[in-house]
Length: 216
Image (cartoon, rainbow, N blue to C red; front, top):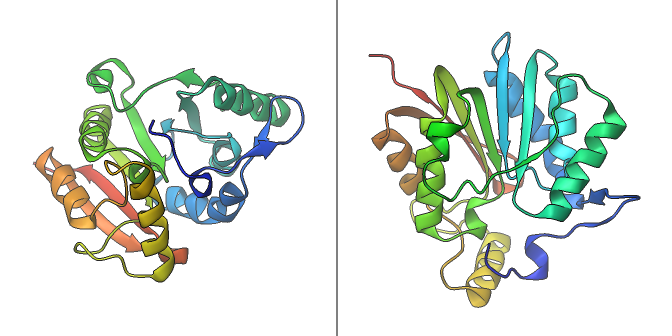
């Protein structure tokens, strides 16, 4: 991942290997509600870029009928996820494994999964890497699976709040290749790989995409 400004990923030590991100506390209720709306009665769920591990513990607690598989690329984040998982002691929450979801091919070797979730990452990676991630996530779904995507986005090419405009400028000043992705670009790409997409407005000016395979 590109070098990021401090505002992009703030996590502090929280005892042992655990890291704590205040943004994860703020986002967790919305993400849990989003996943509740699409969760099947049983199945397997992959979280891409699980970060500190705070989200996936909440998800595994709220949705015990799903087996949850966290992933990350950074060793300290993997250690944090596993520390949270060990503390929670949930039988449906597996240890984290390394996955760089921006690399081609993983969609054919991982899963398939009934739910794949990604939160707050696309604005932190270049658009070609985001395209690979979205395409591979679609490939890793079961026939009735759902891909959920949460985070900040442009609307029809426009940044719609002062906070978003400032954060996007900070990101692009650090690395011109990163920054907010356009909602239409995301929806069009997911549609092009055979998914039906709905987009919902979320708190703090975020969006949630729910993408499912089209019924023949």
